[in-house]
Image 1 (spheres, rainbow, N blue to C red):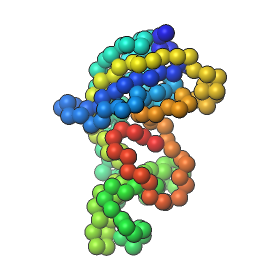
Image 2 (spheres, helix red, strand yellow):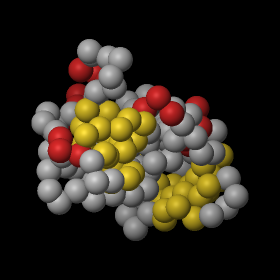
Image 3 (spheres, rainbow, N blue to C red):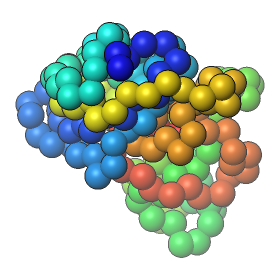
Length: 183
């Protein structure tokens, strides 16, 4: 079966930086609903469109096609007393950029430094500003169910995803997921 709109695609991947340094290798294949549902990057969908199980390719995504350019304006310094104990580098919190009142601009800020009375937070994705190489191997292609099409994602999907996760509405710490998994 060929990859086309409304097919569920299972892809094993290796993610490296532009110099070939391995960032992540999938233990489980990435599974996504093909056809513009934001289940993976558009350039990956474009590269896989019309292909079948067994197809392998290497694709490089520039920052604007992956996690975006690094934005120094998304780094902020906050008072230490605004955060829970214990506070460690790598912890994540939801918040909005200072110049935005729009709830859609909620970002995940990662603690990058902790001082006695200040905390440095970075709202950039850890891979922002990097060109990335994806080594892809299509494992399986199947027709999506009506339910998957209605919900616009493959059910039971795992791996690389670019969909936003709006489940956490408070400022509770989030788990520190390294690598390209975007929530």
